[in-house]
Length: 270
Image (tube, rainbow, N blue to C red; front, side, top):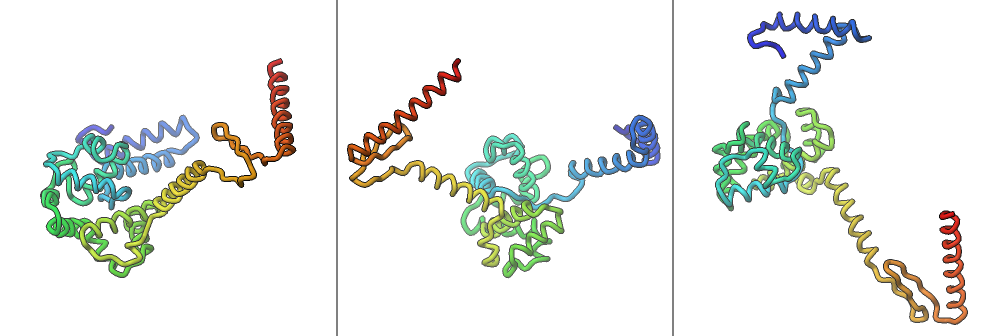
């Protein structure tokens, strides 16, 4: 760590000497090490808030819970712990929600409510009007760049990628959350934006549908013709035609299988 009050030139000299010392012990040149240090410092600054806040993404349900909580009672501080215990249980998601509230200027860097949040404690048309003001301020640059009343989702996705460096999946989620905010604030968006769903949500929905289909399939009762008798044991189901020869044949097949399994187990034990 650089001492407080150290000049920038002294800091540079210190880093160069450190790079030269490391280069003697590694296969990298002092220049390569210095470049790596510079990149690390830059990334560290960015991760510590050196860059502007980015538009939020992820779950509208988090924000629904947030609005519900502030309208039910007065909350003096939205700490990370409060968010994790009341709005979303996963810590990494709590960080995302906290940053989202900061982007909307509803809480400050310490988690304290802002005057804009106080205006959202109302309900009905008053809430809608005040929330529209919040959204138009937070997304000021977007509203001045894209005509959302006629825009296609691709336009907003590209905006999020180019303006904030988001990957496509995150850009899609940021667009979906922006559309949710607009609907909440009574701001009109294009029909394409209104029906847009991010790829993550589409995959989740597809997975849920598959699970429901599998559950439905496993719960089906086998139906057979009256000419057949159905034998069941737990989840095993076996249909046998109501005919003596068919029953004898089925018995022989079952006995053969049991004999095979018995011999196999006996062989494994010896």
